[in-house]
Length: 272
Image 1: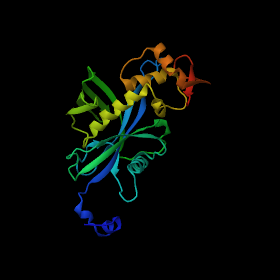
Image 2: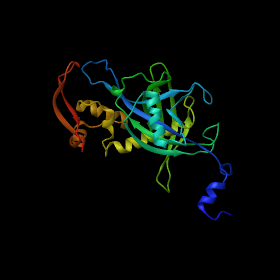
Image 3: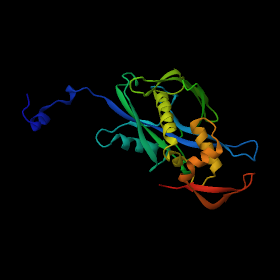
Image 4: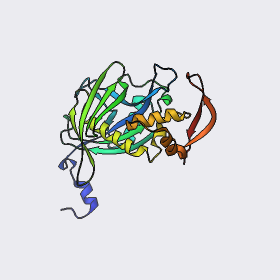
């Protein structure tokens, strides 16, 4: 039996302790614009997610969230997430927050891996450098059945697929749980991270300024409403929406022209 901390540290064997690996996985979200056939209408907005196609086993040729293993000697989990964003999309200094920790015993066939997930939000217009050749933005389309059965269609212009789940509320903790019912294309348990992350963003969008991390510096109120509708997956009444966001935006002297409709006043985010 050791008598002091120093004696213990000098003599203990690390192999006496169970070993595991830690990873960081990032749900990187942005907004895409889709041209309308009617040039007088505002372009439709889609919530987009960055996925990476795996080029090695396990799950070779399947898509996953950007992620990687923690360097236990030099990194925190947040450091790992930042390193991955720099590697995959050459992004630095963007909004990021921790989501959940995923620790299912069999979530990775290689070894026991515990993953801490992060949500990162970015305006695509700020991405000027090429992303990793294996990475691609997918537009997301939501289909819900009384908010219990949820389908997400993903499309990057050349590849399209869907993931589906059942949503339930834990009676004791009131936490949301997802059970996957369809997933043929996404590796590991990353669909669960996607569903949980979207739920987090939806829950926070109406009482925080989260959305503005995905917006350009200048925008019309119509464009901003379209972004809210894409994230919440529902239509919003214009008068009510404008009252809701009135304290978050500031009118500028600029106008948007050349879009086929009357010039629209541009607004910008009014930081609190």
